[in-house]
Length: 458
Image 1 (cartoon, helix red, strand yellow):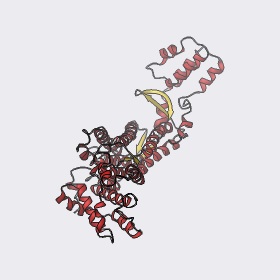
Image 2 (cartoon, rainbow, N blue to C red):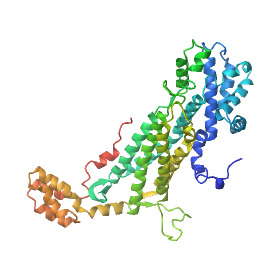
Image 3 (cartoon, rainbow, N blue to C red):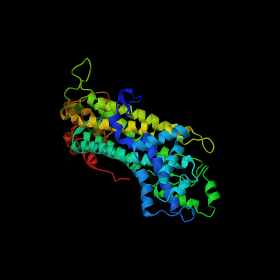
């Protein structure tokens, strides 16, 4: 029975359900059960392929395919069947084991060998690899959205590489830049964090109750269990962690969550800056017919998408921060406090996805207001004081910084006053002419070139 969104406790499963739907297969309860079934099936196949496990014959082609189909064709109905078993077992991983056994028992020739399902495993052997599968699958969904964000911001940088703009340091007028250069700054920051997330390794373990292969050796003392386990974990696409307690210690999970947090913080910084630029009319927002900006002020077009993104990024990072800190800590060889935390991976990454899509929506409605940007800049000739005092330093003028500070600090200078200042300077005439040719809109340094420059990945 589907959940009515109006009855959902969390916004992710209610108001935002459509936005997070792409993550559902990977991070839902179904996604967790699917991953567990896959790990159980593939461990059975790995044991059947290990010569040292003499009591489990190698699978023939039909048997291999039949076992693979158990997880490859896993359905919501299969997940419901596992949940039904869990009502009896009161143990979620044991229910998965029984489900897989039932399916393997039905495969021709494999009924006598079903006890090799979950062989020598503790629940955490299954869980840690399942969570690694879930995380890597979620990354495959999130990274393309992150790349779209980087691409849209990059398009803004390219289109406005040459548009001069007043900088504001400490909220006050500062040396000019270009709008494109400011967008490129964010593009490069996000790209670096996305590259980092893309390169993160997931780790896994398959070494029994306390990480020492105790049960494995009691059954097959001559088998190379570290080698078998390493090959199995790496076959899933993960790095092998040889030193664990009952649990894989989750240090890599913390690294993943910190990676997403850093990306999110850069995006949050961008959301707030765009919000502020909208407030001073540097950007306009395209109106959407039928949309209401305010319940009482009909004229308003609010920057709601950037605000929505900001709020969801905050929620995501609060969860990711707690999870990263909590998951690295477990009493002695294992306690269960990580279990409920790991069940909220979907919540944390779901808020990430909602935020990314909100920023993309906001970007799709932006229009650059070049007239306002230019007028604001050309009304601030005092920003050229930096150039003037720097040229004065070159030619040995006495206390150039102090002279310009006296003339300009806290003052708004127009073109006439700027030229009057230049006329009184003791510098070579050629240098004076260069400064006279300078305007706020041409004093942008290498900003246009930097806006178009892209750093090499990784």
